[in-house]
Image (tube, rainbow, N blue to C red; front, side, top):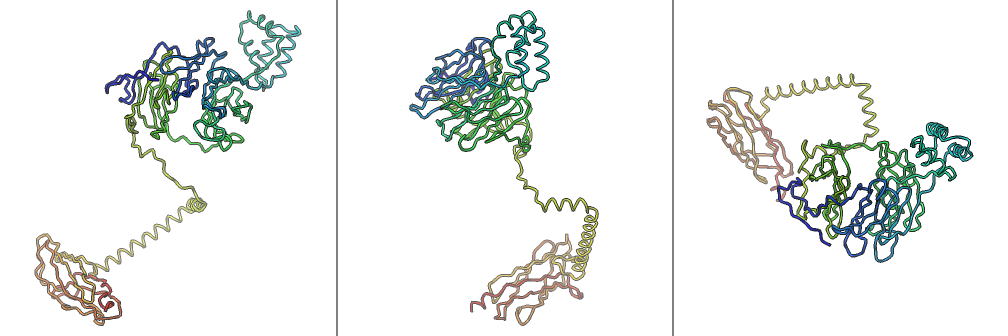
Length: 558
């Protein structure tokens, strides 16, 4: 099966950045449906996927299950009620591996195998209000007229815990001149209260394989969720919700562990697990994106071959936007408002996007194999790193206790901190003044002889080469009449020239002064040699340096 593809130029009016190919567009297809009623499945075993569409028709007539192969309609089956969902699933392990099709319509699920009717499952009936039964019994016996019946049913609907049946609800919606005929037609029939299916999905039975056997998961108007056995079509599990479900997302396996995420009409999201629902208050909104128009439909975009997952949104301004997290990756402009979206393998193309429009049109696009989506393609605003969540550790008991202590003794802790800080500043100032007064720093504090010195020790021993780099840091004044003296332990070291005169120091230049130090001890120990830069006629040194001599390795080797 091949789709007729028209290549798009870089300036295509669809505005998708040249990532999609126009495969097919039929504005007169006459498909009126939603995303929940569209699915893709390989129904013939030939390796080509077909398009399944639950067509709503006019809303009161013309409901059909349609099957497309490529661009042509190959099969259609009449439905008795409006479809609320269409899914393809494997119900057994028979060969060849061809999935069945389940159509949720009203209170029933119609199962098709090889596109032929195979099984019909009907939801169990619900409890009927006893007061409603008594009222209809009085009508059957001729004790009350239709107007009295309407008043009594309205009173029951306002006060009773059990909702009215569909027969009574339809009766309350009739005009007064239509009530008598309706009562004569239905008063002899038993009252039944039947719910309807609002959403449908599939759940793997025991394995996560693509062709593994799947259970049907259905949500009903009576706020219940059922899990059905795929072969016997019996109810495996029943779970109740506070409100009627609208959308479902199912993951896991029924025999192992599963999770059903349900969005309900009360605006809440619930997570269902075995054996009951999980209504956790820990759910937090990670981010929020404001769109240019209301959302009309949405669907997942999954490309396993590329490891790519995103969400397709249909908007009321005739656009389809592709989002990964909160980043806008691509925008597709459509000729009409899109009402349903389906992405997957169609025919032999893995990346096929199928859309239907409000006017009944059918649009098919194919993702280019060279298409690359960048998270920054259409995401204005702050940088992406700002959206990365920080791995904040949990609060420990020690942290909580410390927080309470700081809250109760905050003033005293602040005073103690300020006192300790003042003591630290005072000790630092005293040490700094002492260093300046005794010239214990390698930088001179004298304004007339601003000097700087550093020492380098070279060698392994027992003889070391000691180099002193002396620099005059004045702007334009030379320094003269300087000398260098060494103070050391004579039992450990012997300096070749313990007293050296320094020549005139020109500003900015570094003068290396070298001498040799010999270690005379064989004990393998080291000591400090003090170096003083002196000025003739003064008793206090200008600079002082303490040199930590290394251990003589030469004597150790000998």
